[in-house]
Length: 403
Image 1 (spheres, rainbow, N blue to C red):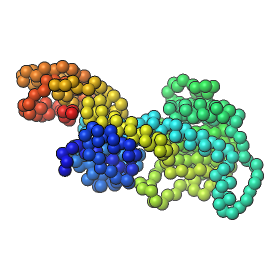
Image 2 (image 1 turned 90 degrees about the vertical axis):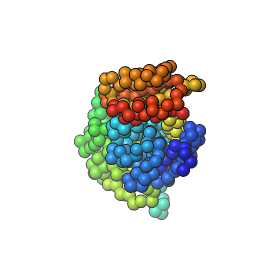
Image 3 (image 1 turned 135 degrees about the horizontal axis):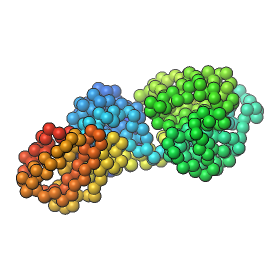
Image 4 (image 1 turned 30 degrees about the vertical axis):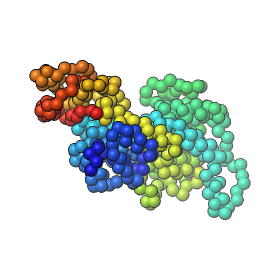
């Protein structure tokens, strides 16, 4: 063992993550695949930081076993693969990169809109099978057609701009009030979007409200001959209902990049109700998988983990009180203290420090319902019993000293 803190990165995270982590003092250990729970528990048994992508699951019981784990980095947009509540209760902030691959997903969606309108995938498959079919039947331009976007966040709004540049009319629905870009029009309901769109593209998170958001009822509300694209989350669309609509001809095509159940490793077998249907584009969850996006995500999340480790910054954590202070000044010591959000904890900490004649130079506290996180910049001291006293307070969840 080198004595350095350990960062464990799984699922072939881009190599650009190594630089910021090593600069922060970490040894980096990598795994190309998504490990099973037993292997993951073994990997993080001594890890201070864990980096994962969308396939690796980090449930509460596994977090309980990872005694040294100080932070988790999700090198992707979503964080639903991590038990965020359990992580917060253990004083473990979780970071992600919600915006780094928006362009990649928007570009792929735009390509699929054109490919479905021109039936390019179907024509290509026919030629691969040795069948020549030069015909304009059911092949359309996208100019002048209506794109309905469900979820007008960073990806949906960027797609909106790109689609308008092609001459498409754009309408959208979002549960939050969103500023329309360009000539896009906000509609009051999902149904209103479905009823007038030639193409419907989904860009929503995985929540109780969005699971099975598009089922048989909603597909029936779509225009005859419309196409559906899901590059968001696998449980948003009822694939059986979608397959029925494609076979009946009610929908003319579809594209899916995400599925309710996905293989943990490359090379594993895969089936879906959409397999073998014409004018259906199936991709293996690669919407954000461009070199540019993966490099940007790696740097973004690794820098967030490094800032937390060195300075205690949680300003971008998804499950933790937001705390940020500048770099600690020379001659001072930075104490990072996570504790249960109950009265009197700061008073106890101040008393312990005052009894040892330790001056507090800076303090920043933020709390949510259950957890409080305080950063204290104090005089440097040598007595380890003072740190033990802060660590042994009954309200303490986790404490360390930042470098």
